Structures are given as C-alpha cells and as structure tokens.
Image (cartoon, rainbow, N blue to C red; front, side, top):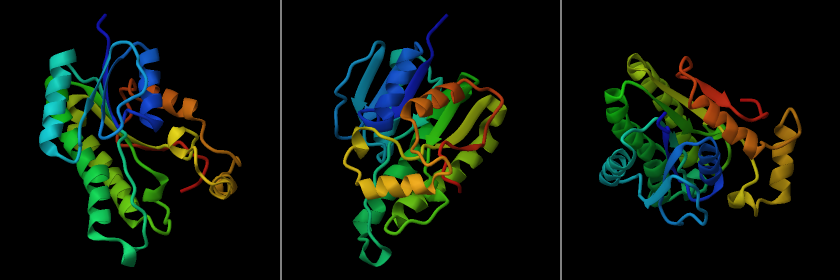
Length: 233
C-alpha cells in the first residue's frame, strides 16, 4: 500500500512543525514549505522547500515539485499565517496588504493549484487553519481577522464546488496553545484566554494535530468549521 502524502504550509515551526511530526508518525510522506525559517528538525520521508505562498508562481512551482516527488497530494494543510497588529487608523497599507496577501491570497493560491491535481486523482482533503478571530473582534487585528473570515468563506465555497470530485474542504480554529511561537506570550494574555474558556484551559497541541490527521482521512464531512477551542464563538 502506497503512503499518503500531505503538503503543509508554514511547516518550519509552531503548529506546522507539530503537524509535520504528527503526519510523519502516522506514516505519511510529508512535504512542507516555509518562507523564512528553515526547519530545525528532520523526519523520515519528508522534504521542505522555501516558498512564498503569496506569490502564485512560486505556489505553482511548489505543487509541481510535490507531484514530481510523490505523484499525488492526498491532503493539503493551509497553515501558513502572519500577523501585523495595529488599530485601523494606525495600520499602514503594507501592514494590511502583507497579512491579506499571505493569510488569504496565499491560501487561495494553494487551494487552486492543489485542486487541479486532486480533481485528476478523484479525491483529496484540504484543511485550512483559520482562527477564532474570524468570529470575535480583537483590537488591532483588522487585517488578520478579515483574512481569516475570508478563509472561512473560501472553505465553504470550495467544499460546495468540488465535493463532486470526492474532495473534502474543512477549516479548523486551532485555539491558543503552547508552541515555540507563543513561548513569550505574557501571563496576562494567557490568563485572559483561560478566563474566556469554558474549561479554563488552553488548547492541547497534541490533541489538535491528532484531530487534523484524523480529519484528513474523513470522507463524508466537508464544508465544516471545527472550533478546536473551548472559547465560544
């Protein structure tokens, strides 16, 4: 039986790194991309390539490389994301555009190119890592929240358009969890997250990535938004 192949954006650290480790543990081929920070870890049957997903030409080259290497894409996880926080009047054009270009445009480019292969292979799973910020307002995150709200709409539309090809498209709101990317989060912020949680806790990163691996193999669920967070939306 041939191994399945997953493509993960933003795979060098944080959620992306933990996702790569989880898929590898479950015997998948892992193809990851990153923009700036080269991965500081190694796993079997994997390859990592520097890619700016906001550049549609680089995305086309990335998909070509994955197909050349592993012949198929069983699952795409759109995890790459950036922030540039500021209140609206203080937010520069560059701050707005950089976040939208990566978080929304990049996700669109990745979905569009991956669909071309998934349609030919008559199946596949697309999982978009969105955010509770798409549903809740936070001061200073207009660009990020708008982008993630767009990802939610994109998820539902892609699911409706391409379900007839056996392709599932879902989104996951990952919650607040401890990885190397949030290691410097202030205690006051962590306390606020816990107070907003109905369980008075943060997300367990291991439970999150195990859920994403599980979701990648579910064939009868699509167009859904999974809030993997005990904060209510």
